[in-house]
Image (cartoon, rainbow, N blue to C red; front, side, top):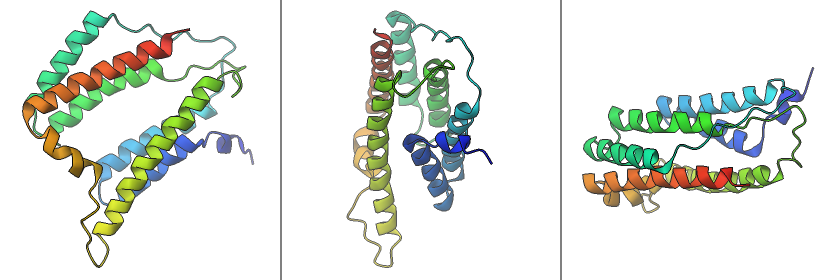
Length: 190
């Protein structure tokens, strides 16, 4: 039996898969399905054979185009109700093209050493994701415990008051898209 699939289980991938399983356990099947689908895509990507040539990453769109998208997304985010289907669709419509644009395109000769900056960044983001996941897990376990302790707020409980007004949601979405654009520009620098 090949152990090749085990090498695809990086810390970040494991965190995504465990998070998906936890969402299923807590009764949030849509969230669980999204996380598990991303985890499965990461594992499948690691199992695919690599081509001999490097595929070129698509370029980052010019900033005026991204500014228009950010403002349009901000208007849509401010107009939609929190946690609504429209909110989910907005995140999907913005997020999917970005994921496709930045998905790693490695050649057959890719090694962790040749991609060391990306590997280091992956570890850093995995730590951030793990910290957020542990915060949410602690909150959930305290709330469902027999004592029902609600003194440890979840991250969404902390940001809800700030993001409830529609103008604040609109500003948040504009900043979110702008930050994503800056990260894409930073990633493309030599």
